[in-house]
Length: 367
Image 1 (cartoon, one colour):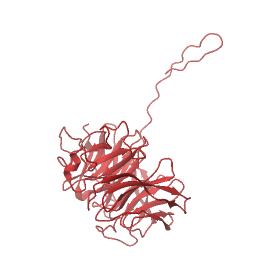
Image 2 (cartoon, rainbow, N blue to C red):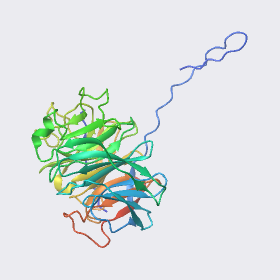
Image 3 (cartoon, rainbow, N blue to C red):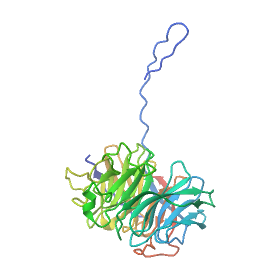
């Protein structure tokens, strides 16, 4: 593995006892020190295929009672993986219309269980649906979908598609500009945005734009979102010809597209913490394990490991360059390892034996 270091700066009581007689004197206590930051992690060379033979997979979920669910973009199928090489069809999401980058994209389980959310492209739009999710590991089922949000512009590219529930219990969605950059700066459009909604698709009362699902704007095609231990949101975004981005997302802020790409030092926009040449990243899925973020790179055919320091800076190191091909998703596994979902059968990759695959990566302490 090869590592590349990219440093980037971000501008941006007392307890009282008592008795039946006289009150005991107050006992002074020291303030509770903050919890130490989790030590940074790094991928090792210890990898193992958990599943193979997947067709244009897009999103993978680790299920709490065992196994995993994977969406297949072109077919609209959801598969259950037993992580020992076996898979079974859970169901096919109705209405999926694959074209270009569109199809069945992100999956997210409801925080309380019992439902599965999906972001998909239909013949007329991009939308989010939820479906009853039943059955134990090895026998999962999905029911008929109910629309949570529809009417998002669709296109052959820039469909966004990642969904996840945040630590606040709200559902977040990354939505691309669907090929029209002007949408990203139009607060009246839901495209080119990161959206925040209730599990039913309603506007939360504390969203930054009253009556709007828009949480942040100025995005071209974001496809990765994850939160740190303090509940702060981060996102990864495809640039056009110059810079891909890793951003800290703040409510109501503008991330520049199409007026700015990468670090612009423009006070109107938020600069990314990390930027990459587009050939080195094309960032998609994003996850956090401990204090470390892991970002799947499609065109760059590599994994990026990102550490954010206490001074607001970030460093990024790459690994597995060209070894696994295109990487679509990165997920924290229950055993503390990292799962990577390859994407070499999506029409842009160079499929290898067994592609596409779900790969387990052992993590170690960074030196």
